[in-house]
Image (cartoon, rainbow, N blue to C red):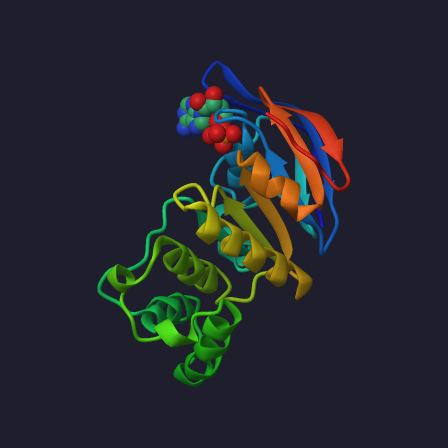
Length: 225
Ligand code: ADP
């Protein structure tokens, strides 16, 4: 599904990624671990076309990221959902409206929205918060709304960049459980994190990134920093 081939990326003179090779199969759950500055976010940004690589290639299904035109990016982004550490919900909209807004933007009809939003909120375990505003939710609940929003256009790939970074242990574990559930339902998940304890509980493939290089790969990973 995703193929990084000898990918190198510079920011100015700084080599952020150095000869990255990675093959991700459809349906996999991969944790990308490494300290801050290792290059995890850069890998995710290359996948959504937010940054361009300098050498090598990235294939996502049939799309060659070295050849993609700006006008094709919306097509690519329809395949991908993204979740960040920094949860940016619309503060004056309810959970329902936050997810509905994402669906409106991606061209869904009112009927589809009214049918799908309750289902997505149920999936993330937030039916009881449907009509609550972000300030009425915990950090973990807000992140689950953000995950619901990222699923609104039914992506085949979910990229999660430090999604538990601002959460306490219990909320972080809930978010990870939700990512695992989404993965079980068929979505490929790439999780970037430095939270070793969480990754060790996931027991899925772990890739360690250090100084822009993959330095370790484990099938059912244990990870220590
Ligand atoms: P991680 O997600 O693992 O914390 P990043 O991919 O954000 O790492 O960063 C990798 C390296 O690239 C770091 O040294 C970081 O300082 C640098 N970097 C990231 N983004 C930029 C940018 N826009 N301009 C310059 N340097 C950057």
